Structure formats: structure tokens, C-alpha cells
Image (cartoon, rainbow, N blue to C red):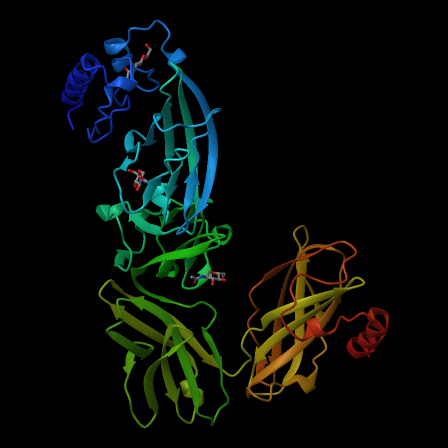
Length: 502
Ligand SMILES: *[C@@H]1O[C@H](CO)[C@@H](O)[C@H](O)[C@H]1NC(C)=O
Ligand SMILES: *[C@@H]1O[C@H](CO)[C@@H](O)[C@H](O)[C@H]1NC(C)=O
Ligand SMILES: *[C@@H]1O[C@H](CO)[C@@H](O)[C@H](O)[C@H]1NC(C)=O
């Protein structure tokens, strides 16, 4: 709407009404919708009333040097719940009589005056006291209402301002998105390539009192920005600074207050060339057995080829090899079963995966020494660090060494005791090893290597651990070591010392 035209119309209306000695709404509406005032001229002396928002009308129509003297003002807050009725009292310090004129405003708009009103269904004005009843209130009724009282027998006018607060559940939610300029992505599936920057999603909640709390979930768990530096959440605004494969999923924005909860969701698909999971590059085998080796990877869009190589020779299904693909823990897996493994089968293999965004290769080693030990967890009791490891070896294990250092010094090593009873029954070729070291508190790096009848494994990956001062329990309790500690620590230590050092 052209403001100049609006202003001009307003001016004409003001002047006309002033000439007719009828008060006029001094709050021009946004959409220029002026409601006419009661034509009961006898009740008014023609003075315009003071203006709070708009100086135009004041300067145009005012006769008075101090316009505020015309209204005796007061203010209060009323509360109501969605769906119920609310009564807004027009509180004046005298009895409202038959010939008192009352006008009710919703924001800038007159909604009721005398016994007439604009919305016959939901609002009623009481003859007796001028109060306004609004039925079936909605969050949209959360607004500022005013009642103006013009007593017949006095020159005083009254204006009571009522802030109506409508409590209820959030009832409208939309997710806006910056790229693609989408106002509402609810129910949509958005696809971006990994590496895309600055994706913003704004969860907008309309009319919610009390204010709705907004949380973002991805695939049914809360998004934890402290664990992902590429995600930032600022109330309703979710920013993905750099898009990665793991950002794919269903995003849910949830707005709630004590009255209820409302959700909106969309799906984000991330495209990337294939990539392999770390830590699956070595397989232990025994001559004369059938052994399966595998590569675990992800690719979006879906991979269109997955090949196995030994050296530079591609392998195919045959009497020697069985090739297959499946899924494991939401990852793709390509498998190669090698039948009746011989010395000549040991060595390096290669996986090669292709999708529309690229080709990636991964090297896999097959040998008879154990796989590098995998650190499982630790427990620290009275200066002794108990560590747990998983070692893959079809052959009996003969030794296990634990390597340790703090940042200043070089590696030290100590032989660990193997608890043979912990050969994993359910997983043949897997061993659970426990080893202990006497260590002071502080930050340590630890690693390990294992030996079977065929030789030593490669060293494990290095794990950093932090041993707090005077601690009995450690922060990581991932394996059998966690069952060690009970309230009877003293008794247990004696037991453990015999178990580990005899
Ligand atoms: C009202 O008057 C004030 C002070 O004179 C001025 O700053 C403001 O812009 C005016 N507002 C309008 C809507 O004219
Ligand atoms: C008050 O005004 C708002 C905004 O125009 C509207 O949505 C609402 O229905 C109105 N309520 C009443 C009781 O007039
Ligand atoms: C969001 O995540 C929290 C915590 O994991 C969970 O309790 C809640 O049910 C999830 N909400 C949805 C809509 O997935």
C-alpha cells in the first residue's frame, strides 16, 4: 500500500469526521481498513482525541495544546487459554449507564461499540458493564485491546488498555532454508554434495505463549553441536557450516511449551564419492582354512561397481573365490571368501568402489600373524592401570606387550598377562586380553602388539588416556575391566593383584 495515498485518505477522513464532530480511530490500520465510529453525535463535543502512534492526525486535527488530558488512561494484563472464553473488563471508576458510549478496539481496529460488534459469533459486549467476551480464543487473539468510555454526563473520557495473553501450545511451525530460497522445507528431500557450505535452516514458530522451546534432532536423536564443529545451533537456527556425509538424515525441528508440542521435518541427502571405514585393513588367517576378508564403505549415490584385486589382477567368482556385497551397520560391505588359503594367498588385496562422483581404492592385508590389538577400555585402581584388548588370531596367542609413554618420554614396554579363559567363544579367532601397568596419574599414550606361533602383529593404534589424580574409577568403562570395581575395592585389588601378577 502506498503510504502517501494512505496518509492522504487518512487526512481526508480525519478532516471530514472532525467537521462532522465525530471521533475517529486515530490508529490507521496497516491495510487502510477504517471502521466508522458510532454516529451518535450528541455524545461527543467534536474534540479529537490524543494520538500515541501517529503525529499526523494530531497535527492535523488537534485543537488542544495538551491532547493527553482527554483520556484518563489505565492498563492491565488479561490471560486466557486457547479454546476457552475470556472476559475483558472495561474498568472505570463509576457505574456504566445506559447512555454511556463504549468502544472496543483490537489493535487499531474498532471491533465493538455499544451493542453492535463486528464479529457476531465470537464476541459480545455486555450492556450492563461494557465488558467484552471473546469466545474460543485462538493464539491470533493474543493482542492489545482497548476500551474507550465516553460518559454522557461528564467530559472525562477513559481509555483502558488490555494486553491479552493467550496461552496455548505452539500451533504453526515452518522450516525456512537459505539456499534454494525455500520458505518451507517441511516434508521435502534436499540433496547436496558433501563440501557444500553454510546451509541454514530456520525453524519459525508462530504465536506461542509461553514462548516455545526449540530443539533440533537428526534421525531421532538430539543434534549435539559440541561433538560436531561444523554444526551450529542458535535457538531455531541450524547452520551446517560444511556439509559432510554424516550430516545426512531426517531433521526434525520440535517446538514445545507446557501446553503442547509441534514438529516439522525434512530430509537431507548428502552425495559423496565412496570412502572406506578405517581400521579394517588387516585379516588374520590360518593356512588350509577358508577365510573371508571384507571392505566396509559408504557411497551416495549407491555404488555401481565394487571390484577385488590381488596385485593388479582382478578377482572373479571361481572355485577359489566367492564375491558378494551386503550391508552392515548402515555401511556397505564387499566380501571376498578365499577358499583353502595357501601361502601364496597371503599378501595385499585391493577393493575398488565406484559411484557417479568417483572411484576409491583400499588396501587389505591377509597374513598369519595376529591383527594389531584393538584397545577396548581401562580401569585405574591405586596406581595400577588395567587395560582390555581384543586381538584377532586363529592361532594361539603366546605374548602380548603393552607400550606406553607420556608426552615427554619415549616408549616403554611391558609384557601383559594373557587371560586364556577369555578366548571369545562366540567369535572364533578372537581373544580378549587384559594387561596391567603400574602408572602415575597424568596423560598417557598407550598401544600394544600381540604374538602368535607365526610372529608379532603390527603395533596397534595409539590411544590417549587421561588418568585423574587419586582416581578409582576411570571415565571409560567399555569392557570387562568395568566389572572389576565394586564397593569392595580393597578385596578386589588383592584378588586382581594375584590374578595379574602371579
Ligand atoms: C512523530 O514526531 C517525531 C518527533 O517530532 C518524529 O521523529 C517522528 O518521525 C514522527 N512520526 C511520524 C509517524 O510522523
Ligand atoms: C484481533 O486482531 C487479530 C489481528 O488482526 C485477529 O487475528 C484476531 O482474530 C482479532 N481478535 C478479535 C477478538 O477481534
Ligand atoms: C529427539 O531426541 C531426543 C533425545 O534423543 C528424544 O528423546 C526425542 O524423542 C527426539 N524427538 C524426535 C521427534 O525424534
